[in-house]
Image 1 (cartoon, rainbow, N blue to C red):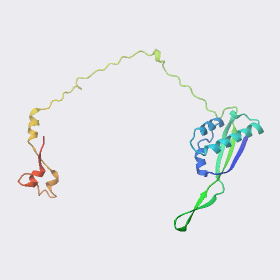
Image 2: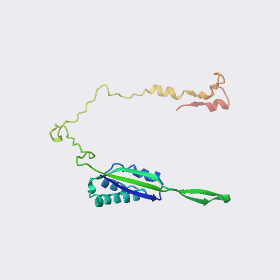
Image 3: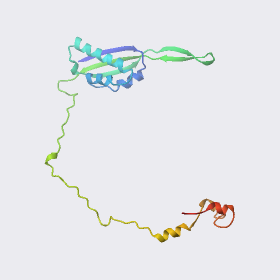
Length: 194
């Protein structure tokens, strides 16, 4: 059994209503209304009103139960566009399109066989937690893992007197190196570490 309801000339663009309509496709009616109640979009209002109207049609005209209904089809089509204009600079007028939409809703009846309902599968734990033997946490350290960091004192003293040359001053062909010598350039590009 199919129950139909329509809402025409809703002053909202069809793309905004389709965002919400796609969320509630193929849902049971009560679940769809709960979903619409918590969606923070203006299009949720006309859709909820239409679903309630279709539910009332099903109860009054066809004597169906509310709990046995689901949304079979929900289509949103474009209605006529109201054309307005807005004055802009230099005497121009720019168009404003106030779009409208038509919503068609078809409710279907959930079969008694439960073809559309899904059963929850219960998963049993393979072993109960109380029956498992308690395992003690044992941490073993391998002797090869233990390493000591030893810094040689002689190498540290040798590196302090070493002169570091700036690699940017080596030139293209390897000439124009400033390694030693006298003058301002030698002092600028020769540093001592440490």
